[in-house]
Every structure is written in C-alpha cells, then in structure tokens.
Amino acid sequence: MRTAFLAAIAGLSVVAASPASAQTPAARQAECQEAFGKLDAEAVKTITNGDFCRGLAGFIVFKWTGPEAATIVKSVSEKVLSPRDVQSRSTGHADLGGTAAQGQAVPGVQPAGVAAGTIAMVGTDAGRDAIAALSVNPAVLFLAEKATSQLAKLSRVADVTVFVPISSTGDEEIAAVDSGSKFRYFGARVRFNWTGISSGSSVWGKAEQMLMERASRMNLTFSRIGKLLVDTSNVDACTVALLDNPLDDTAIIVACGAPVGFKSGLAQATSINEELMRIRRVADAKYFGADFRFDSGDPTLGAVENASGQFMFVGLAFGRRFDAGNPASTATSGIRARLGVRHAKLDSQPKAEFAVEGSVGYELSRRTADDNVLEISAGVEIRRTQGTSTAPDEFQADYTMFRASLTMPLMQGAGVSLNVASPITGDVSPTISVNFNWGLLLSNRPGR
Amino acid sequence: MQDRFRGNIGTGTIQAKFFADSTNIDPDSLVATYAADDGSNAQAPHDETAPGGSAKVEITATKPGLLEVLVRTGHDEESGRLQVRRNGEIVHDEPIQGPARWFYVVVAS
Image (tube, rainbow over all chains, first blue to last red; front, side, top):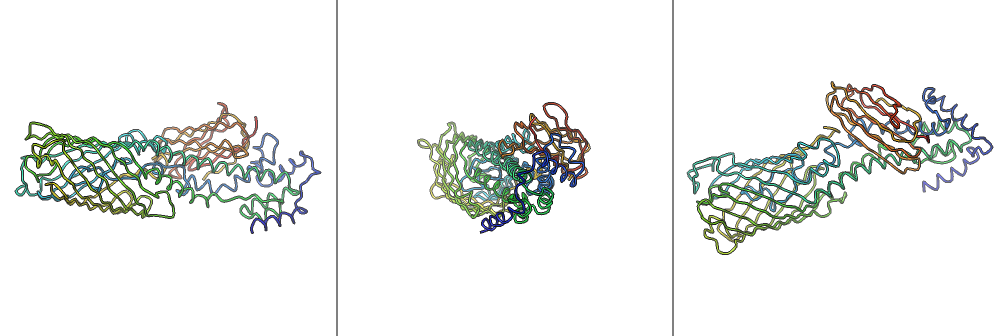
C-alpha cells in the first residue's frame, strides 16, 4: 500500500523534479558545489576531486547518521562490542559436580566465562557442612581483555575449579569418622568444552557481521542520494528536503523525484542487540566435552567410616538445550548426560578399584533476562564397580541415585540453587544442599 | 560527540590509530567501518587500548565508498590523538576529547 502510494507520488513528481537531461555534468557539479557551500562552507573545501554531488551526498549521509554514530560511541544500545557481549554466560557456577553439594542434577562441562564462586551448605547423614568452590577461566582471566574472537572462544572452552570444606563436619561428635583434621577434603576439577571453540566463533562472526551490515546499509543510502542529486531538477530544493526529512520519502519524492528509503540506525539498534543475544544463546545451548576430577579426603564428609582416599574421574559430558534461539519463547528444555570412569584408592584398603559412573537428566528453564535463567532439573546417577568391591560401603561402589535441582537467579550473574539427592539403590547417604552461586561478568563497555 | 566531516580520501590501505592519553580513566575503543558504494566489501575492524596505549585498525579500501572512524571513550573528559593514514602517509592527525567520529568519502585515487 505504502509502496503504491510512493510510486504514485513519484509519478506525479516527475514533472516537478524531472532529470536535468539538458544540463552538462559540469553545470550539475557547480550546482552541487553551490548547494554544498550553502550548507557548510568549510566542508565543501574538503572535496578535492571535483565531484561535489558525491561529496554532498556523503555530507547528507554524515548528517543523517550523526545520531546513530553518537549512539554507537556513547550509549550501550548499538555500541561497539564490549567483552560482555561475546563472553559465555551459559554457566555462572563453580563446579561442585561429584561432591555431596553437587549443584545440578547432571553436571555439565561448560566453563565459567571468567570466574565463578559457590558456597554450598550441605546436609548428609553425617551432619551439616559447608563447601566453598572457586572456578577460574585462566585463559580469559589472564589473556583476553578485549572483545575479540579470542575472548568469544576462550570464555567457552575450559576452566579450573578448586574446592574445600569451609567448616568441620559441623558436629564432629555425630560424624561417623573423625579424621582429626578440619582440612580433610579438597578437590579440583577441569572442565573442557570442545563445542566452545566453534560456538565462540559463531558468536564473534555474527557480531562482526552486524557491524559490516551497518556499513553496507549506509553506503547504499549514500549511492541513492548521490543518484538523486545528479538526476534532480533542483539540487537546492532536493538537498533541503533530504536534510529536513531523512525519514519522509513522500517529501523526498516531491523534491527529488525518487525515494531514498532511509531507515534510522537507532531503530535497528534494538534488533541488532536482540540478534546478538539470540546467537549467543544458540551458541551456548549445547556442549560436548571432557570432565576431569580429582578428590582427596573423605567425599562422604564423614557419613561413612574409612571412606577417605584419593579419587580420580575422567569422563565425557554432553548437553543440548532445545529452542534456545527462538526469540518468541523464553522457556526451553534440554537434556544432559555424562559418562566416565572413576578410579578410587582408599587409605584403608590396599587395592584401588575402578567404577563406571554416569548420569542422564532433563531440565526445564525460563529466561527472565539475558543473564538470568530459572532452571529446574532432575536426573538419575549410577555407579557400578568393576568386579566385586572389597569394601562396597567405603568405596560407595554401587548405587543408583535420584537427583533434582532448582536454580533461581537473584541478579545478573548470581543465584541460589536447592539440590537434593536420594538413593534408589545402594547404601549411600541422601544429601540436601543450598548453593549460593556467583559468576563474574566482563565489562559491558568496550576495552574493560 | 566530536563529529567531523573530513571530505575525500583516496582508495588504498587506510590506517586509523588512536593514542589514548595516560591520564584517561579507563580503556577506549577505536572502530572503523567501510563499504564500497554498492555496499560490497564491508569491513568493521576494531581495537581497544588502555590509558597511555594506542589502538590501531586498518581498512583496505579498493573502491569508492564511505569510511567512518569512531573513537569511543568511556568519559567525555578523556582525550587522546587520532591519526588517519593512507598508504602510510598521514592524512589527518589531531587531538580529540571525548567520543569522536571522522567521516570520509572514499574516492578513486
């Protein structure tokens, strides 16, 4: 409808703004120079190649895009990319996977974007305890400080977590075992997300593409204006109309003979930002990687006597969140799974034992803001020891466990999760924990 | 924003460099955007610099088009020197304060 209306106006305005076919190019350039000079006597002097119509077209685009440029360099709506725009925000949790305070039904391997911390209060058969965990993404922390493709990749690839109990077993008198040391359990984790390399590339590629699309749009507008100025019958009137009515094609057609179709970059800023968010969500909606864990001490936190030892886990983890890129939906679902081998050497037993350990789970999440996700998940975890365990209780050799977790955001990068685990088979302690999670976000401004 | 129409610049390798003053409060960002008249060959390199350092971007402009050089400072009182070179030769080299844009019409050389 609007197109037909503009076409009709263009037809009627042919007489008023018909091409100056009889005019020589030199005369047209003189007209453009005069019109340009009236606008800005200094700017016209910068046109050194004699093509004043093209220079005037550039000047008009310069004027039209001034507010947009001011937005880019000053506000946050269509800013130059900041580190936060490209960093991973899929997880802000330090990994307590495999401990009594595990914060997800099925732990994943998506690393912390920069650094994350968790303080977990956990209850087991042995009593109450608290565990602190700190995850750092060393590559991002020490190498990447700018919004670059390197940052987009590194923030999604790997992190290291260390954790220690920050209390004794709570009530030593009710613990089944007293090791005599408060610092009697610690662990370390390395999460490696192979998918992070490619997903980081796609986030960065899209971001850069959006900046280039803006440059292309600006030049197409420039070309249309340049053609109008060459073709119009009245350069002065056309110039005034263009400068006064950048978004009003009707007025431009009347004065210049054809429309420009300029769309404000300010209006596009919102959609550009939304697109960047969507791409980042899609990129962070899947992972496949490795999970390396080492624990020393008593992983039952005193619930089982003589359970202290050294434990190592090597496994693979996979996760996928569905419909993450749909801007109309804030709710998503997903699956998680992991499978690996655990090597356990108890202090009280002469022989080490191997076990297969794995879990599978389902999650539902709702995005309340770009960085905030409300998530509920449930899963089943199993451990099966090779052969017959010499000390099944101490090794926690064979069990099937139901796990569930509810994570609620508190603010950007911080949240709380409530986690429960209950054995279906096997003699292991049920657990309940409340985890306070904090994740560091990079600067929302360029270069910081 | 210091917004300046700088007129013609010839095709070629165009470099923009921003030297941030050491007294600046925080890092600043430099970005250049370029595309040919028909919208092709779009480029948008960007770089950041800490106070006292410099950021540099480079455009290969093979055809006439438009070129924008943008400096994004975190604070209006932050300053530095913006320099634009074409094929190694300095075209403009001036101090700026606060966010800035230099706008060029790229012409055949």
